[in-house]
Length: 310
DNA sequence: AAGACGAAAGTGGTTGA
DNA sequence: TCAACAACTTTCGTCTT
Image 1 (cartoon, rainbow, N blue to C red):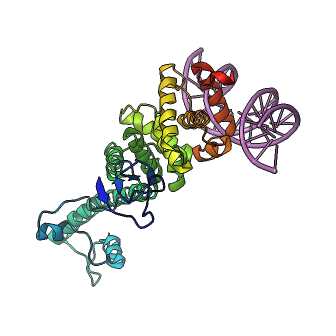
Image 2 (cartoon, helix red, strand yellow):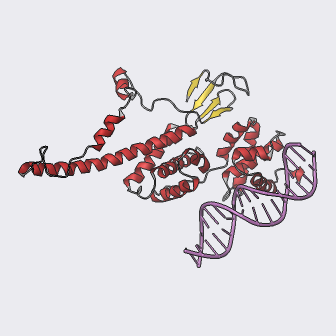
Image 3 (tube, rainbow, N blue to C red):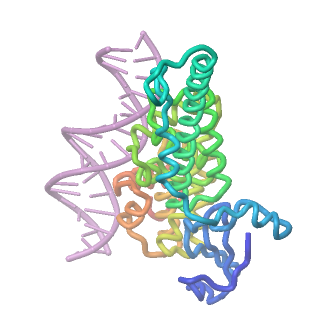
């Protein structure tokens, strides 16, 4: 957490007029340090991921320098050792020279294979980084996702699956496990693979790596939804409270967390007299009005929330 | 006119035989 | 592999403010 005086886009908090903001890189949000209003989410963590204690370390760790020359890089990769045992003049190579050539070919082949996996890994990790940046996800999530990906590579389970799909699944898993909720459609929107494929690989991945991920709590979505809808803090607090009650009564299991979060916010806004339509909430929460209504009915009935309406 | 409500049919995914 | 199933969506007509 780093305190900053002002950002490029926001100079004054619309809620309380404070000019002090805090960048929460863990959740990827810009928050007013006075009243706690989430100003923006999905901020990009552009700090260096390394630390340097003196100039030489800084020089060593900084990766900013001359641009990479792709031509040279490519040339190196496309070099081959000819399979014919001839020298430059077309004469046969014999004896010790010939043995040496065999050895050279062997090692060249071997090196090329590891080189390819390294290259694929680099590509996949940059893909994870790209998606994470677009979603404004913090560093620790990216590292977790990278770790998942590496493990899958080590277990040789990439074959038959695209690197993009595994990368997307790794990122989704990392989000879930870090309690930084991003929905599958959100991940899919920045990925090259669709939601279905991502979900498939995700299930496969948590099975293979034997990781347990608890279902996302609807409360995790409330703050994101309410900041997008400019909802006052007291409504948000009430909505989270409603979700707590719902959890106690077992109304959350098996239901989509976004739907419940939307319904809780809707109820809270009625109780607090905030004007919010089902349509707007549904739109932001990426569920339909019908789902908001169904969850809303369930919650109101089972929790006795609005006695005057019954 | 906009929002809320609900019925009915359809969709995609999970589960258990 | 297939059918049953629950959650959710789409669509559309009606009621309320």
